[in-house]
Image (cartoon, rainbow, N blue to C red):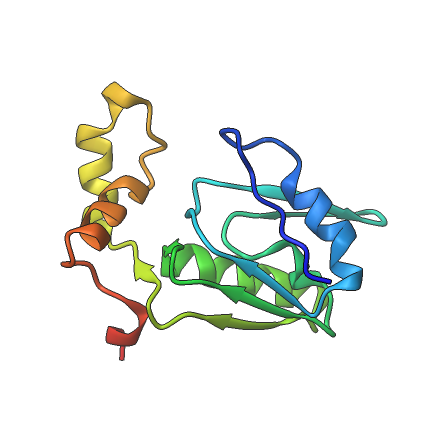
Length: 145
């Protein structure tokens, strides 16, 4: 049986915690959209983990986590999360990133900070990165060699 957890609100619905509970039954945990403006907190014992890009199942070494092509990824945020996770727990789930996932570049953040205040953005470049994705001018992971 396949299960999917889909948020139908603006976030803060507890998806990350529910995914963490259901991860025990899963092989793959896939994040398919969003960027590092999102976030989820997972508590294991006395440890609290806060993720913005990594899928909830990343704490389980026997699982496979995927960041899909619908996610816009800030490489520096991703590297910081992975470095922190590896420093704290060492072994974690395998992580695959779609080569079609788009990259948030520094100019996306700059554009967002200049133009996004009127609509209440987080200033992290998510909207401008999606604009480039839709406009077919964005940079994808496949092009980051």
